[in-house]
Image 1 (cartoon, rainbow, N blue to C red):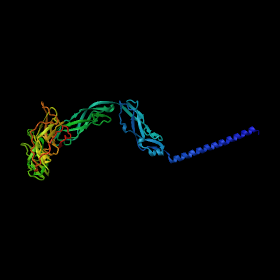
Image 2: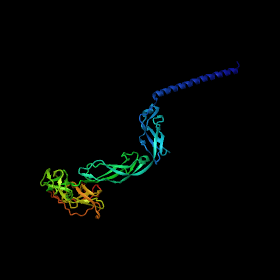
Image 3: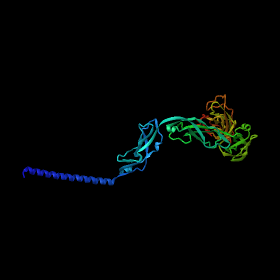
Image 4: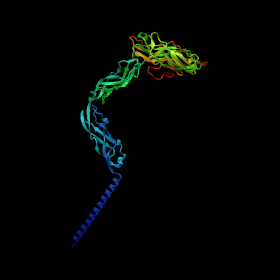
Length: 470
């Protein structure tokens, strides 16, 4: 064997051994990788399953001039996932976004793919239960429909409601054309709840079709309307307040804090002419408070007008509460009209009401004729008969405990020639001087000047220096 042949043989042997070693190394690396993957999979295996919660589907790319006929906000899908166990352990519904893209689609029916995005890149969406949603798109239109008021219950016995008044009388319905075309009326429901007087409500409207069924996927503008339901008493009947005829003052150091009458109103029966002549109240027989120091309970006869009768008996139960106080008195005041609408006149059933006051004797003794106001707020009232609860404005430190009667009947009617109303908060000069009779002896002279400021027609807190007590 020559030298060259020997050298080639040695070279081939070395390359064979190197190749064998390289194969051994590659096999070892592969086996190691397999062992590592097996260990990793045992510790954090790849799992495939359905996600427990259904994903809400949102809408993207919807044109302003189109709107889905169906309610897509209620659509959901369920997905099958593949992810490591560590990712499964941390998955939450907020990690997913399911949506349909309506970009470029016009009116009509479309089958749109549902797409799902997930925050964790290790999570793979294997399957979507509903890969497509059928969506009907319709052009957005508007139309005007009338408002219809449905009275859901009844007035009190002896009263009837009249046709309601609506403001506005029509509303604008907007939405998909298919839905808007079904709407024929906007319904407002009003409950009278045994009302005896005019009922005023702000009610939401419900778009309905001709069969009285609500129509979904549409909006009403305005969504709320103002409804006025006039309520009138049956002919030959008239409900009036009961006013207790109080005589005298309690003993020194005591005051009349309240008077309760049951019932506080009664129904008179009679001819139309007779009832028209009756004011909005009836008085009781006199009740003497002179030197009283405790509660007085009496069953009192009503002084019924001639040719009239009472529906349910002519007696009432009266409870007068007498309590020790630092000072108290009862004054008779003329009611003041406030908030009467233009072109209207108001007739008040009585010219004076009794106001029961309490407070420090010096303040009571310093009361002037214009320190107390009894206000009848007629703001927003329409022509007709109304029963109004008086509102009393008194100076700071004086308390208005009660007003007798508790309500005053006011008749509002149109007037061809009405004198201009004074600005809110101003009233004509009245020659009313409260007859203040302190209920306890005191030689203390008044130490402060009282000022009662009449608030504006809209209910709000009285100005500084006056308190407003119902």
